[in-house]
Image (cartoon, rainbow, N blue to C red; front, top):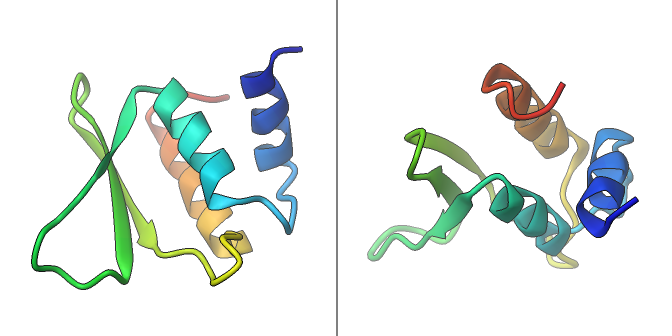
Length: 86
């Protein structure tokens, strides 16, 4: 099992300590790139897939860099809706 597969397994099992950096690795694997918006509050983060024109936006992670369960649920739903995961 490669690193991305391991991260996906952790992501789908909704580990409470799943980090923002791990999410970023997964999304990069699906060709999502972080969007840096100037002059906008730092409360949200967006990722954009240029090829498919898909956007995923979410609240910033907590101060330890861990994502909340609702964020993991939202991202899982988005990736499933776009048929990037089963």
